[in-house]
Amino acid sequence: MQTVTLNNGIAMPILGFGVYQIPDDRTEQAVTDALAAGYRLIDTAAAYRNEQAVGRAIKNSGIPREDLFVTTKLWVQDAGEGNTERAFAASLDRLGLDYLDLYLIHQPYGDYYSEWRAMQRLHEEGRIRAIGVSNFPLDRLVDLITQNEITPAVNQVEVNPFHQRQDYQLRMRELGVQIESWGPFAEGRNNLFNDPTLTAIAHARGKSVAQIVLRWLVQRGVVAIPKSVRPDRMAENIAVFDFTLTHDEMTRIATLDTAQSQFFDHRDPDWVRQLGTRRID
Ligand code: NAP
Image (cartoon, rainbow, N blue to C red; front, side, top):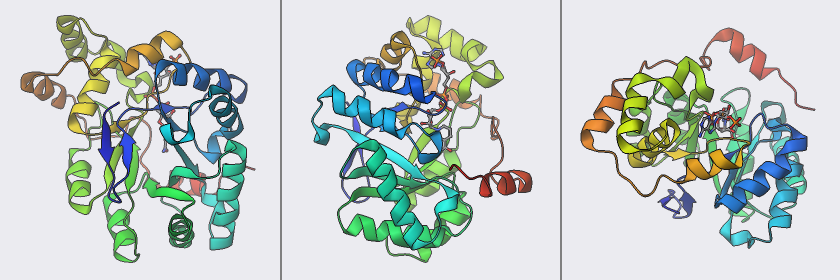
């Protein structure tokens, strides 16, 4: 598996498997299938409420721990250094692991400065190999970097053909922050799987639309974590390393950018209140 090198020198697979919205009782099987298909990066979150099932699949796979790259995320409610440390320990316990590869602040809300201080300490203690953030607008990201010692290794944000985030990628590259795509297929919104441009490129290449989208991300150097509960699609989504999109194909995909979220704007006051007050337990 191709990797990217994070700002602290560790390698992260460029393609992984996301488990958002996989019900707890289906997650163990899905992760088992994903590991069998060759995925080694698994992306979960305390808020997905399926860390335990992810942990069971990892344990039963027999894959050496050092071959895996496990990400989970801290929810907004766990601000305060003590709370963050407790939430981290609880996630680790549910995952059945004794260290984490990547721990992300899930949302740019609340007292995330206290969360970051706790995460820096956990990182220094060797309990997390890399720390990062998710859904951080560039101004919040720069402020966090300016006021702290450790620069986030990753910012996981929505990136897909309709919301391409070239501006984020450019600025984050300057800052030393790796861009990671959530929602690489926009969960099928805006009829992504039938988009005429993507379909035309897919037909010409004998590939699927999903493969074209993931190849486009990989070629841009964007880490992607597609989700599927279907083993056939897991295999399809990871088979994107045997072809290269041409400059012309990349340019045609670039024209699909609407520079708008397919979901919601993380700066919309109603969403800030809704997510900022959501409790997960
Ligand atoms: P996504 O990966 O863009 O799309 C998943 C959808 O695409 C599912 O409905 C899946 O259906 C379908 N699909 C997958 N492969 C396909 C294929 N080859 N052909 C056709 N359909 C296919 O959406 P996502 O789950 O929202 O994003 C991926 C991961 O990013 C999440 O699982 C999570 O780990 C992370 N995420 C993070 C945040 C955040 O705030 N940090 C937010 C959202 C997501 P089936 O399952 O039925 O195959």
